[in-house]
Image (cartoon, rainbow, N blue to C red; front, side, top):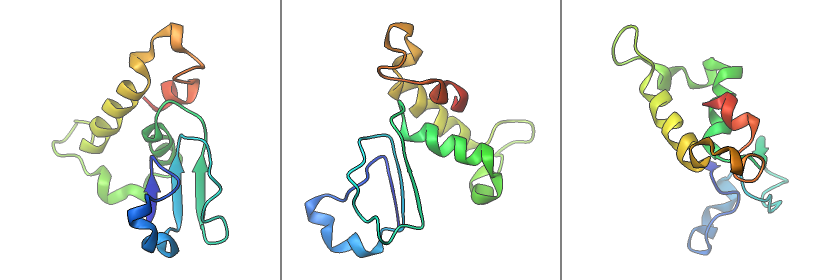
Length: 110
């Protein structure tokens, strides 16, 4: 199981803790599940979706099923989903909020 956009389960979900194998998050790292994770991406960027988009950019094979294009020549639906979240979480890339609410990684991901 992967946690995306959070790096620790809610108290009501604590019984699932032993199943957490991946964390992809943009919040302060709690250090939870450290002894059982096979992958961890926990960096202070504007959006967790930026981290996912950068992972796709690095290795598209990880997300091959999710990158199927709905129409030839059009971006994959996942690209729209991630792009929208990156823009919203990064406050529409407002320059006054650079390095406070978004980073260059968010811009690259978008």
